[in-house]
Image 1 (cartoon, rainbow, N blue to C red):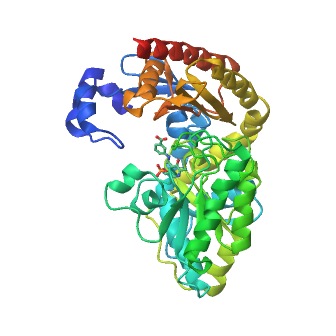
Image 2 (image 1 turned 45 degrees about the horizontal axis):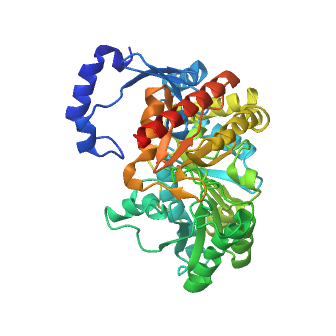
Image 3 (image 1 turned 90 degrees about the horizontal axis):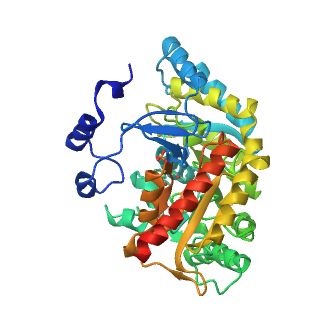
Length: 457
Ligand code: PXG
């Protein structure tokens, strides 16, 4: 029996308040309100303890890509747990699901990737990145090539190393981050700039902040550049077309490793298997998590290109790194079943040719609303920038909390989306139907009106 059935909604809320500290939460604020208890889910809908049905426009936390209620994934986990619930991949062991998944990941990844290192989450994958990148340069006899360049407002996870790679200032302020050897350059956020340059000019400028940083540090000190193909938690920041080709040129020219953080964009979100495929870049490493199992079980990992794997293997010596749950059998079994669903149901092609264009067309029209300064979407990943005035463009004072006001209206009206400041972001499951897309747009439009009324008093 599912745990939730044992308690009433209000009892659960009390137990939650008394015993549970939530992630990324102001606990004082939460205690003044009540948590929303989600009890079950099906397709693209979640249901709360009050019996309300809510369209999940965020796929959980950017992960339930194949949608809820997939018995096939449940059965894969149960069958694997009966057969072999746990064994590790340490000490020259492996098991069928970790091996089979490794081979399947190679099949769907760009050609430079033949190997994977497993982890349990996106954060663990990015901790692995820091260890691996430094190990690579050590093995090549260049241990001073140590610094990893990332971007302001990037999100790479919440462990000490992953939060350091991330460029979230409030996270750095708690706990003395970043760790040494991680620096940050400009993000390609044209809408957030003063917009005196064209998007392409701005994209080049943002990319060249990487080149400037390499020259400032000295190329012999720089190990790698890490970035999300499209920044997710930072507010679905889609770089101008000029950005990624220029970043690729810089990484090639200076010989530094390029890391594409595919935790959100991996496994189809942009209508290609990876964000790197979408933008035509050739990363050396790709951390992933979330969508690999559609969130049904925790699993992460790093796709490792031959450039790096060959050095690790040829030079030898133990890489002192790994997790108890690196390649957990049940999680790997679910990932295999999930990737097979993506392939069999052509869900990625569907984003490229069907539901992607369908939702994008309607989403971009939301820019006609007086509150929306910019609507953008790529694949099934979109954002609305809420602004005080469109011409001339004026953004709200953040303290007004307009994004949160709008987000609360959305949830009350049956649609979960996230507010990143005054940017509303969306990432619905890949199985979203046309009718459900229409419902998303209709609720959004209605809630933009409600928000406007609320702030005009
Ligand atoms: N990289 C990227 C690009 C991510 O988006 C991580 C790494 C870390 O993954 P784990 O599995 O350790 O959480 C992420 C996670 C939000 C939100 O509110 C986004 C994430 C996680 C939690 C909340 O947008 N992204």
